[in-house]
Length: 156
Image 1 (cartoon, rainbow, N blue to C red):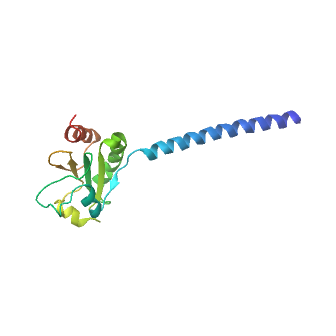
Image 2: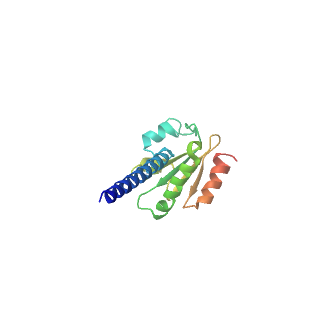
């Protein structure tokens, strides 16, 4: 009986320590995921501060950011917008601190969408550090996004 109790006690300790290690791994993975860059949702007020103040300078484009950016004009009901949303999240994580990926809900920010003439969604504004931004419309595969990021934004 004492041997059986001892075996059960040792087995319990082994399983407990394995579970403890597994939970540390889960915590580490969660921290790594949280530290990755994510897309950033903007309101009109935030856009005017972080991207371009088109109200103050309506005739001149002046990017206010400190690294290149993509602005995704989308709507929650839009199928193609839902298709590219996870791609943009992946790209935000992959490119980390090299670019910003902003998202603007055209339903909530109608004035901002109108200011950029958004008539079709998704519409994507690629903003390099120097030069004029370029607009693209429609869903694109991840490879096309990477090509645009490398050629237009990062000039690789």
